[in-house]
Image (cartoon, rainbow, N blue to C red; front, side, top):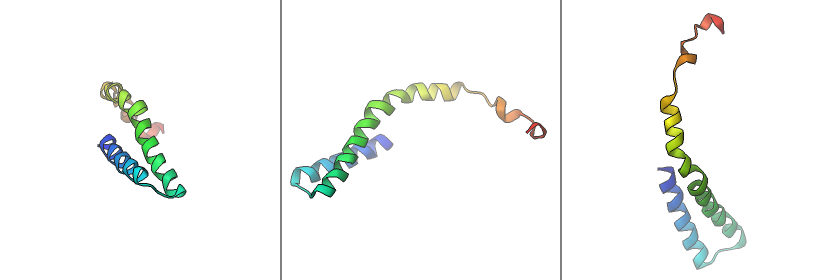
Length: 69
């Protein structure tokens, strides 16, 4: 969902840049595009691995009796 929303924002941002904006707005739109590119390059490739790690985890730490804390 996050990837889809970032992609949508990047498309809108590129459209605004293509039609021309002021310098302050251009920096904002370029930031939106850069955020989407970062997410696609750095976060999306890790999701399957992150999910596997989370699913393989245990609740051992949650079973510690509170008197030990």
